[in-house]
Amino acid sequence: GNIRQLANVVEQCCVLATGPLLTLAQVEKAVAGESRAIPTLAEARRDFERDYLERLLRLTGGNASDAARLADRNRTEFYRLLQKHELNAAAFKDG
Image (tube, rainbow, N blue to C red):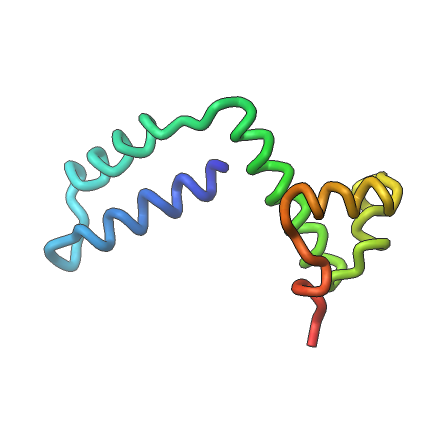
């Protein structure tokens, strides 16, 4: 979440920059806009869970069994989580 917020702030600053350097005011404005966009706890949990699953799948090259093992979950439960987040392990396969 924090890295995504930082990336959003940097992206917004770059898009709105009028010159080669960013001003403190531009950064403060982008940060202020970001702080108002605090997700609910349910949204934060959902985002974390999805990011976590994606990270595991990237790490294992899309091997759901290995990803489930790393997450300390059985494959059936892991596949349910993937389905809940509309993730396809095959999309993460190398090659």
